[in-house]
Image (cartoon, rainbow, N blue to C red):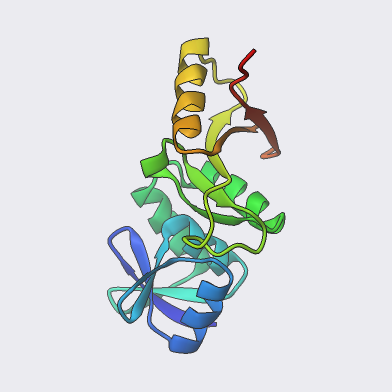
Length: 170
């Protein structure tokens, strides 16, 4: 298990071997000699006992780290459910805030940055009600960046159903 540091809303990996392994598997964003993991990536890896997190020099248990991450990101639980499911399916998953969704998803085995984003995924609880206008905006935004829009709907048992919504020209 590798030690990493929680700094603001990122987890910093400094071990070169671990960093190389993570980059190879599509995790994080390289910044100089460090790898920055999003909170959802780090919680996912901590749950698999791949890393432990230090905050102010003190080692956090998996539970304490997840609590601290949830305090920083109130949507962490739903993001983690979808993120972990997509990773289990072999996709490379990155944050998608700039793309109008929770995640941007790359094809299986792809390296982010080397290939174009395949999907923009936005997460909804099953009881969420939205308008056709809202869906239309999301689909258009995805279409404008040459990708597909996916609604990830989470039910009360944390099962995820994916809906691909596309614009059709007749």
